[in-house]
Length: 66
Image 1 (cartoon, rainbow, N blue to C red):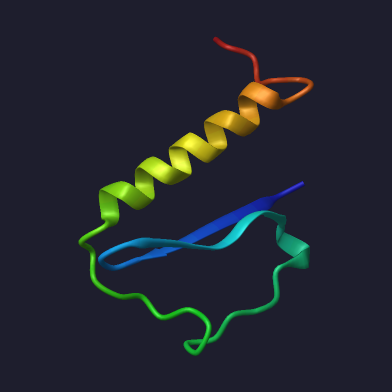
Image 2: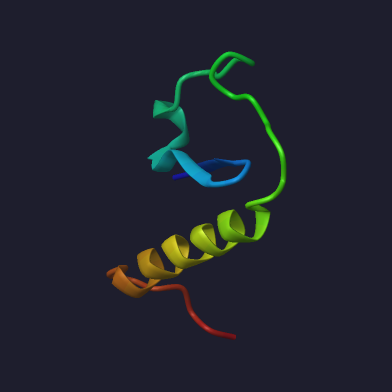
């Protein structure tokens, strides 16, 4: 199942969708999704990495390491 996490950022990061099934995420227009500045880019990337890492840590069947 494909899942989506979407964050917007300018001077701070904001989670719009967090780990939702893609089929359950409504279509977004420019009204709901408005890209802004990039000041908090690294914070947003770090937040996503942390969240996904926690999901893998808590998964019943974590991905295999190669």
